[in-house]
Image 1 (cartoon, rainbow over the protein chains, first blue to last red):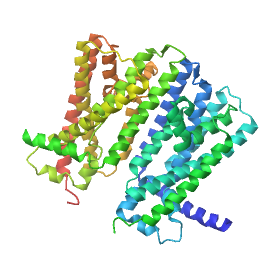
Image 2: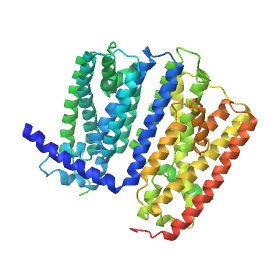
Image 3: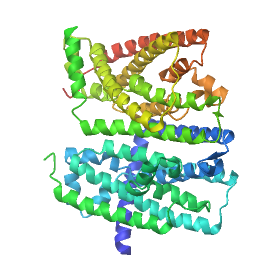
Image 4: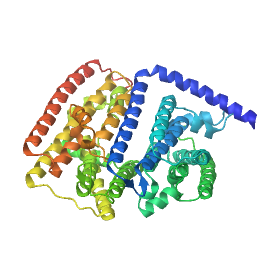
Length: 265
Length: 263
C-alpha cells in the first residue's frame, strides 16, 4: 500500500515539475492569471467587509461568521483547483483521442485524468491566500476551540472526498458526452453558492445543495463545526453522504470506461 | 441586406446545435441570479436600506444586471482570436461581405438568443421572488435603451480588439481572464459599483467597465439627473470612437501580417 502511494506520489511530482516548467514558458499569461485571482479575492473580501459594516446579521449568522463561510469556500475550492485542474482539459483529450494513450499505461487512468495537470498558479495562490485568511480569522469575533479545529480538519477530509467525487462524476459525463467544459463550469457555479451559508437559500435549493450536489456538506457543515454553531446536519450524515458520493462516482466512472468508444480513432 | 438577414437566421440556428452547452450556460446564469437575489433578499429582512439602496432598488438592479449581461456582455466572439490564429477567418475574408459586418451579425444572433432565454428566466425569477420593479420615466426609458445599444457596440469593439491578438499569438486567455474578472466585479449581479469606496469608484470611471451595465442600471433606476446622464453617454460615445479607431488600426496591421496559417 505504502509502495503504491510512493509510486503514485512520484508520478504526480513529475507532473508537478512539468507544470512548473510550463508556467515559466508562459510567464506573461500566468502572471495575468495570478493577478486576476488576487483581484477577485481582494474585491470579494472588500465587498464582504463593506456588507459587514452595514448589516448586523445574515440568515441568523453574525457578519463575522458570514466571512468564515466565504473563507472555507475559498480554501476548499483552492485545494480542488490545485489537484484537479486536469479535469478541465479532459473533454479535449476524449475528443482528440489523447485519452487512448493513457489507457494502456501502468497507472490508473482515473488518476491521470484527475490529477495529471496540477495548477502551480493555484499552489502559490493557496499559500498566500491561506495566510491572508488566517490573518482575517484572527481579527474576527468567533468561538473557535481546539476541539472545533480538530473536528473541522477531519471534516475537511470529507469535503475533499466530496470534491473528488464530484470531479469524477464530471469526468464520467465527459466520456459519455465528450463535453466537459459546460459541466465543470456548472459545478464551479454551484460551488460558488457555498460562499454563503446554504441554509439561506430557498427550501428546494437548500435540499439539493445538501443532498444532490452536496456543496453544503462540503462547505457549510465544516464551517459551522469550526465556529461551534448548531450543525444543519450531523457529522455522520455528512460523512455518509461523502462516502456514498465517492462510491457512486467510482461506479459511474467504471460504467463510463466500459462505454468508452475512442471517439477520434 | 438579404444576405445579412440570411446570415442572421443561420447564426441563430447555429447557436442551437450544441443544445446541452446552451442549456448549461443559461442554467449557470440563472444560478448566479438566484444567488444574488437570495443574498440581498436575506440582507433586507433585517433592515430597509443598505449602502444607499432600498430593497426595491437593489432587487431591480439585480434583475437589470442579469438582463444587461445578455444584451451587452453576451458575445459570439469569445473564440475570435483562436479563429484568427488558426486561419479560420480566411473563409470570411474572401466572401463578398465585410468581416466586421459578418462578426456583428453573429454577435447580434447570439444576443437575441440570450435575450430570448433571459426573458424566460426572468419570468421564473419573478414568480419565485415576486419583486416590485419600478418603471423609469419615458425619457429615462429611451435613454436606457440608447445606453444599452451603445454598451453593446463598445463590447463588440473590445471583443474585436481581443480577437486581434490572434494575429500574433495563440495565447489570449491571460488578458481575457483579467477582463472577465474586472467585468465580474464592475458589471456583475452581486453588487452595484457605487457601494465601493469612492476612490475605487472614481478610478473605475477612468475605464470602460462602468459602461457595460452599471451606468445603464443607474439611468433606469433614476439615480442620475439629466446632466449626469448627458456626460455619461458622452463618455460612452468617446470610448466607442476611441476604441474603434484603435481596433481598426490594429486590425489593419494584423491583416497585413496575416499568413492564413494552417489553411
